[in-house]
Length: 389
Image (cartoon, rainbow, N blue to C red; front, side, top):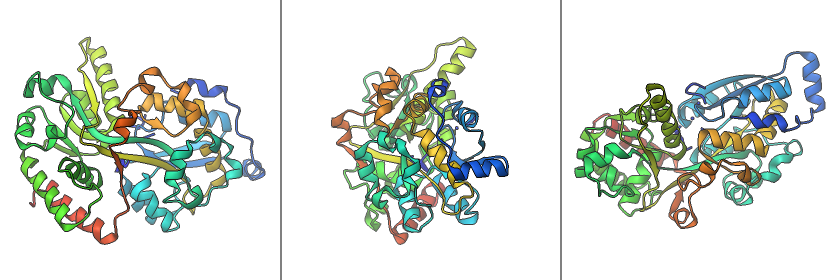
């Protein structure tokens, strides 16, 4: 999730339900693992998005392997990068978004090379996704794909129709970027990801521009688009805040990640069940003009202290039953082709999670900006959210 992906779960944790994983055989311990076990307790330090594993993913791994997991959460990719720069040996497993974050960290030598002899479950990973990642990680030497999705619009359909009329089209970026429409929705609450990479691209797509245009002209276009709707924005937040706002009715339209909107629907249903009321219809839409597609990956930091245990966790996450249960829980598409048959029908057939071919054809992936380009875009975005435009 570029998800700044985004973006991800243990309370806020649930990125990227595992009753079935007990059926899998435990990964075979390596000699190094055995020696470490004899020397003392086994440990694995994980840094992940909130709501990006199933409720019992970690518990089941601990029961299967005897490895104690320390599990911390971050809210965006920038926080992850800063943490690894300050404490390069703090974590053994991380979940960055592929572009531009993992791409940048691979180039900087921040990740340990994968020992593929310990990762036989790589045979389950979609070759097309591996080939795509190979463009930023030669030979797929450092990262393994986890979840993928899109950045689009989440909405409370009833509130949006009440504000715009029953016949309003709900499949366009106009809902967010047309000032007259945004003004009508301001009363029920508009929320945006506080993330320039995710928020610039949709505005450019709406204008028919290249979402990977980092030029001064493109920045000016985006600045003007947001200046026109800024009075109508209620919330600039991270993915967890937008999930909660959409679920509890504080927000009726959000720019967010695909799976987050599905999670908001689940939470809204839980709240409604507790209150014995009818849950609102919360819907995720990939706008007809197009959207951004992203992939989150799993990597082992170069200075990780428990590299063997990290490989065991990677192998575990690539078990089809394990990753299918995670997708069923977090409502994100995974990269494991052997897991597809194990997905809940509601997940596998949801076009917002697994878009049809004609919709995929309109999706774009982010490119790596230069340092100058990234700094310029960040400055414009700060001006937008802090009202300096």
